[in-house]
Amino acid sequence: MPIEQRGVDTIPDGERTSGPRDLVSILIGSNLCLGVIIFGWLPVSFGLGFWQSVSAVVSGTVLGTALTAPLALVSLRTGTNLSTSSGAQFGVRGRLVGSVVGLLLSLGYTALTIWIGGDVMVGTLHRLLGLPTGGLSYGVVYALLAGATVVGAVFGYRVLLRLSRVLAFAMTALLVLGVIAYAPDFTAAAPPGAGGYLLGSFWPTWLLALVAAGLSGPIAFITLLGDYTRYVSPARHSSRAVLGAAWLGLIAGLLIPQLFGTFTAYAARAAADYAGPLVAASPAWYLVPLLLAASAGSVGNAGLMLYSMGLDLDAILPRASRARATYTVAVAATACVFAGHYAWAAQDAMTSFVLLLTAIGTPWAVITLIGFARCRGEYDADALQVFNRRARGGAYWYRAGWNIRATASWALGAATGLLAVSLPSYEGPLLPLTGGVDCSFLLSAVVGGATYTALNASQGRGKPRDQPQPART
Image 1 (tube, helix red, strand yellow):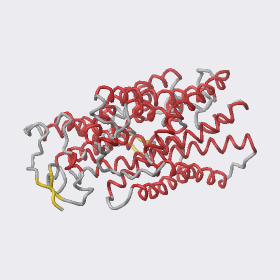
Image 2 (spheres, one colour):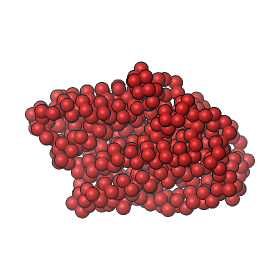
Image 3 (cartoon, rainbow, N blue to C red):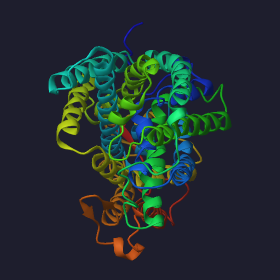
Image 4 (cartoon, one colour):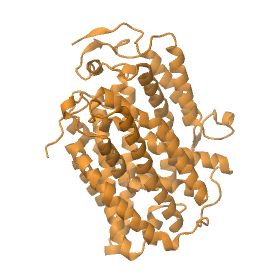
């Protein structure tokens, strides 16, 4: 199969041959991996009980999907990825905000997936073949996973779609086997070393788990959904069908692996660490399936994330080809894997990463959705590509390519979120106003969305305040 040549340019309708079923396949198949499974362990590591953990994961995932799924409709209408599509609100240069947010989200999740998948692979190979568990073994496994991931990401959407279709069935079977394997050891009693509620009481800890383990899953897709729906034709598939597919794909694709993670965390008595206890508690007959899940699932998930990173870097640097951009971000992601393994504790790294990225990404998503509603889904696809052509002008030129109102609204919302966040090593100065409870995602969304709405209250529906200009090179 040839390497995909499309970057962030508009996909012609004749090439938009995917459908809602493909969207479901790619969202489920790519998420049935240890990089998503481990998020089900986070509430357990915070000291929550089994049913408390389940409720936090389910509530956060449903809430996050309600915000994220409608973004699938944006690229359905524009035929390009979401960060480029956001130029309608932020300006053709201002949409770099979305590209940077998407790049950071994908970078972090790619590194996390390879990191956790590699750790489980080394532990499993140690039990199966006696592989040493030193730094060399981890380095070789990480490099092999990263290399396989690059191959899929460079070949592009069609290869990743085919891989996701296979993984949707294969990984489901492996997880079902996993439930059978770990069921005899399952107990809802608190695992040794749990140490009580991380934040001292139930509600603050439960809300932290809702954001870090539940809400963060759908939020990771705020810039990714458009990578898939840009290949769906609005002439052949309705918005309702695409929205339903996004809902189903996100809910099933995230809850199945995350709840498996919560279940196995209790079965393996995993409180302070997940990968090690998971491998140690596995019966001998499940080691090979566990190895397959760690390798194939990680390649599928990280491949899609890396593909999205390549598109976002391509959007930032139009002169770079998508393939070269993908190679570049692959090096950065692999470097983050080694930093994660040798420098950070898993719980602290994961919690800090998802809370920070949720705080800065949520207001961007809210502003993009408000803009979609204001323009009733009608976009000038050609004007969105002005920056990629290294031209000037067009309907979304605003002021030198930036819509100051949208950008300032996002910046205010993101700053509010960062000032209200509670991390293992940092507490924002606004945290006392919320009783010590991390409401950073909610505050960032409300402040960003309300500011954008207020600044555009007197503007016509979907009309830029500045007069459109013809594009010129």
